[in-house]
Length: 250
Ligand SMILES: [Zn+2]
Image 1 (tube, rainbow, N blue to C red):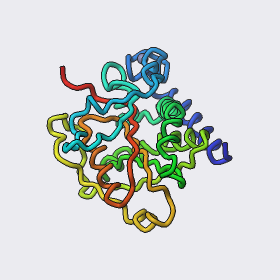
Image 2 (image 1 turned 45 degrees about the vertical axis):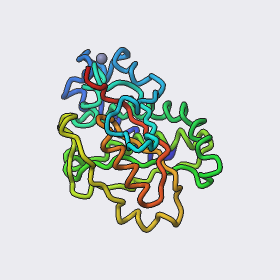
Image 3 (image 1 turned 60 degrees about the horizontal axis):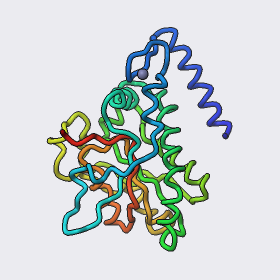
Image 4 (image 1 turned 60 degrees about the vertical axis):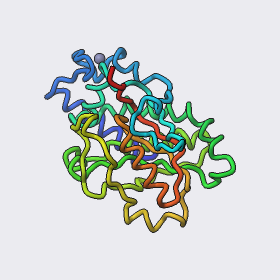
């Protein structure tokens, strides 16, 4: 661990200790007091990743085209839902310490699969591409909440010998924000584009093979738009990894 990362860790711990004196901490899943999260609620994030694309309605490209493989750790239900909401949108960035190791474990688990998929086509390794938030969400959160997950994914895959880089290649074209919309409203495609900053780098380094990373998959619209946007610039998505997947309606 570098000095900078260690310093960040020390500062984070200090900030947490100070805030604990002012704001009582509790598990966002079940409300258990005086713990950042409880073992019971954390358990969902210890599941190995499972293929979920057959449960996701909007991933089907039709015409017999293969569906983008999607791995998720847990259903977006029960206590998992408030935990992810707290982490993403309720100021519990300290839950990075729960979700980042979960993504690290998932990527370690998926590494043999990734390695096999890259054989012959991905000498340059793998690019981790995170789902872009809208400008507004980014401003409200005051951070890119997927960046720690991308760091964890990159570290795990590198540790398994896969040359991996995180490049946030995509941005939202018109600042549309899907958070807060129900599944039925989240139809159609998401307006994404390759960011100007990264457009220049495509074709001059960086792998043309990508792993998409997002927090929650709901209808699959975002993942599908990401895969097709990447494909437009010659990058093939091997699949997507998310923390959680919204179960289909009963
Ligand atoms: Zn709990």
